[in-house]
Amino acid sequence: MSEFKKKKFKQTDKGLVIVYTGEGKGKTTAALGLALRAAGYKKKVLIVQFGKVWFTGELEGIKKLAPYVKLVQGGLGFVKIFDDSSPFSEHIKAAQKTYDYLYKEVLSGKWDMVIADEIVGAVAGKLLKHEHLIRLIKDKPVKMDLALTGHHGKKNLFKLADLVTEMQPIKHPFQKGILAKMGVDY
Image 1 (cartoon, helix red, strand yellow):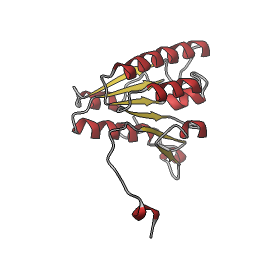
Image 2: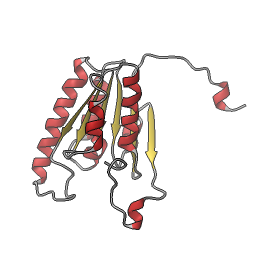
Image 3: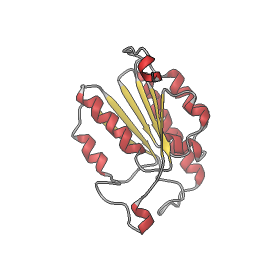
């Protein structure tokens, strides 16, 4: 008999800590799927994006989920990608400001779910410290679900999570020289 069949399952109101990480595509997309599902149950969802400051389809799409879902972008863009000319110290300040906003909102009790998009990468890129993640997870309201996304997630984060999914690239259009596609990649 499989372990799954032997296990006794129970419903819980405890909020989950969910991590989407890895080098493959789909981390933000998976988190946005959580927001879509939660909005279907009229739950209040806040999405805070670290380092994403340009127009994406999700910005317009999320507006259609109002008043249940709100998206806030923070930061100066990705570090040393595209046309980034900001000093690293300014990226750190912007990431801290975004984190401060996120942390205040998490503690506010207004949200059923909070998604911190690209925060894992912000820690891996040394814009934030691992202690920021620990504080966010430990201080979140008990019933609030918290999703964290980004590249280079580490085992010390995984130990604090209830669910961890690692996106692994197998095949990607970039490998054929195809650029990001509107409506699919952004």
